[in-house]
Image 1 (cartoon, helix red, strand yellow):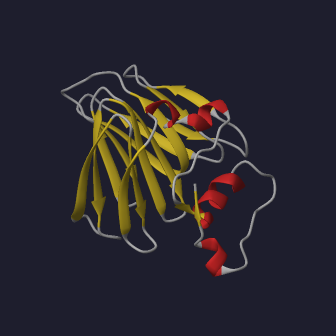
Image 2 (cartoon, one colour):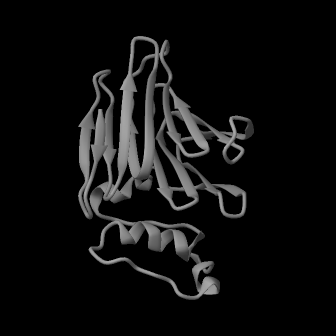
Image 3 (cartoon, one colour):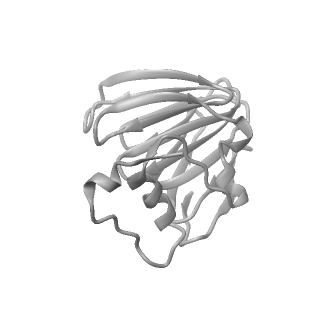
Length: 179
């Protein structure tokens, strides 16, 4: 299953295992579900997943150097340039961060309801924040929420909802933190 959305478009995608994925604007993902595995690759954009419980087959979302294995939970994954943000609305997820272009796991985090992990591939930083679980996928209701994120990441997300590209000419301005 391949899903690609246009500028400003969102789409719910029922998966054959009973899980539901929601793809945000200008997102691209593909799902491969077999008898022994459930795997989704998020090439770009944002996706929310409400998983059907299946303890025998973890549901794996891969996003560049980040993988999120989960079973029977609801969580959001957003990719904006080199930044990946994973937020949990229900249950628990584990996030494995791999070294760039390698398969070696360099950092693992376990997130529970109302936690969000932000990983910045540009500088290698990662942080966990407490967030309102009901706002983890606020984009599905037309809302945009950011917590201490660099302006470059916020603009990358907003550009997906615009017919025109938004460019920050000054690198110092691009690093300003936005809440």
